[in-house]
Image (tube, rainbow, N blue to C red; front, side):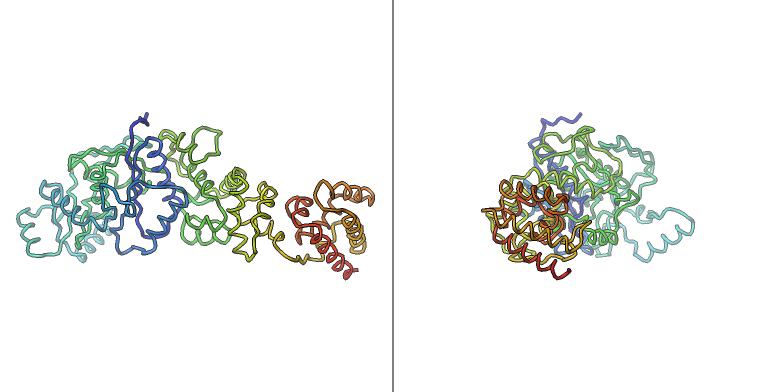
Length: 497
């Protein structure tokens, strides 16, 4: 069992090579939860050593995405801290210092092989149906000779000198002990010819210098996990606890999500990129709840969690290594739950930008009255536009066909509309208490269903067949506007007769 009374130091260390996806969001969340649960520190470190794949906008999107999710870090490139700099591109000399230490201790060596030679070796290995690997040519160069060649400026990389005998045993908190034969671990490049360190070295050095106690990362790092342990052990450092998280599968449960499938998802109003969820009408609280449960559970029945709940209840023992399919139906479910959990003023402020974006001039006081009507019915915040936009229109123009309910002719519908207008004109207001009883009496008198009579009235005053509760909506719209809209509906129906 993990001792949660002992403060941890954890880091979220993304590469700014593309957009922030759900997997990154979940990794950041788990780091944050463990840090806050134990009273420890959560560090943001930008691993930008892969300059070929570097995307200039990616770092800001990562920061924006984490802020939107409600994750705040204690140390990072924007807030500083005692172990900076927190961008790996600014730590080049630190990594070279430690790489040279490995060379001097015999745990790494200079490699002078050209790309052309390496490609030729790779092709020969493939022809022999061997797993491509470095053939060790430079491994046996005398260290003094290698040092002289480096001093002369000969182009080189630095490779880690993996033991050829025995096994390496590593321990993952989710998967237990993993044993790998050393002969199967390649002599990986740890510093490129341009002097930039690769992840294998840079992350291990940073985790040590930044005193990281627990490393959450994706299962894609499992194949090189033994290498990373060997590098840490070559320095004689304390190993952090490693937690390789479950992979996300596409909604079908078959295979990982591809970019093409991600583009198709957007057509259906979904995404795998964190910053898209805001524009799609999702609450950060719901996204946090959703991704927390894709790889972790508290028990077999609790599903609604706020951030304080998650901080209190999160545990490493609740993590699950099994792949998790992305279930957007579950996200919609959680979003609905969290919308229902909001205070009415909060809900009003969160839906307002969607109405404004749709071109409506929004009256804040009116929106506050609308909020309790729409709160039980919203799945996403942007549903407010189709559900409640009519409140902010001067006029609505219903589809004439929608004014004719099932079982009635246009001539019969116009008669119902006229009788309804007469009832409403005789009332001092159209609140539910005042308007609903006489309208229900009219339903009885006409011998029709409430669905038929109220359906005509609903389409007349809202312009749509589905709306929040009719009489509560009419009260907000106001008596005079309602009467005007019913008269317009009568004109449309008369034109059909």
